[in-house]
Image 1 (cartoon, rainbow, N blue to C red):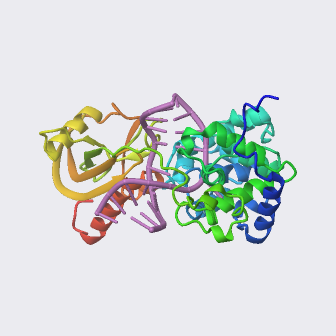
Image 2 (image 1 turned 30 degrees about the horizontal axis):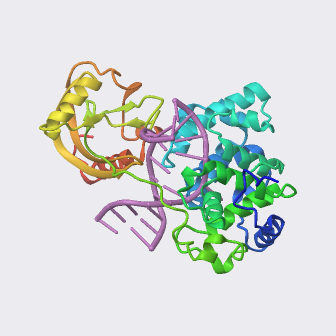
Length: 374
DNA sequence: GATCCGTGGTG
DNA sequence: TCACCAAGGAT
């Protein structure tokens, strides 16, 4: 008989035993999380999206606020996107909020508000991929669908002592996840797997002595658990200096603009500005950018604040200056929309984190200098 | 398949 | 201080 072509990394492991020991561990040591207290697919969907690339402790207050404000998919579908983004403000990856809003429309429009149970239909919703779909369907409906999130990649990479970074072996890891999943207890199994990765099989200093899979884990048995999973390649972050304008007109109103709907910080509001080119002063940059983007002449006055901020693929240094409107009619040339607002009205608009520091600085200055022109 | 997309915690 | 990273998906 010919050797099996697809011999798996799991061939020597007792999968039934692994399932039982993990579920036993989960019954004793699983986490009590807000979205596990019910099986409403809408609430579980919201939690799964918020948890993408985001820590549990960060998500919990956002999750609670969201379910209070938008208790049902109909509430979300009927909401204004700006209000959705405002509720998401500070959580990052804002496409997630835009996709939630769009998918709510899909669910209400195509499925009468009933969350679909079919994997292909769930994955067709905006912002839902294979892992999120598996998470929702297994948690809400106890459907036997595997997942492969960051926790699961780490746990299985160690279990099979994977010799390459997980991104180089996704088909193998999905195969492991499919074969290990307990078809009789998919809900608890998937949750247990994520809890194991989050609390025991952690990135740094995993607590192997508490792990139910210790005896089977190939990394543990080789003593390589601290170097697996292997690191992904990473490139140095580029750095940009940005000139930013807080422009006031003669009435003291402040100019803000809304960024294009897609791309970085899509749909959020900001103070206008742009990249400082080589050989250009900050003041020159700000005057040029405002003329290009908004079409008005301004006077660049005193420095308000400097903000250093790191995004995923680059860092910025924001040089923020108080400016005064001089001439021309402001219009949205390189943005979606512009508005002149008061400092009080600004609270309504969703801003990226780095811009919230500018608003704080403006408020502090307004309080500290009552005679200042506000 | 490589790149883009935020923010806060951490060693 | 700073690179790395944490419940991924879209293009």
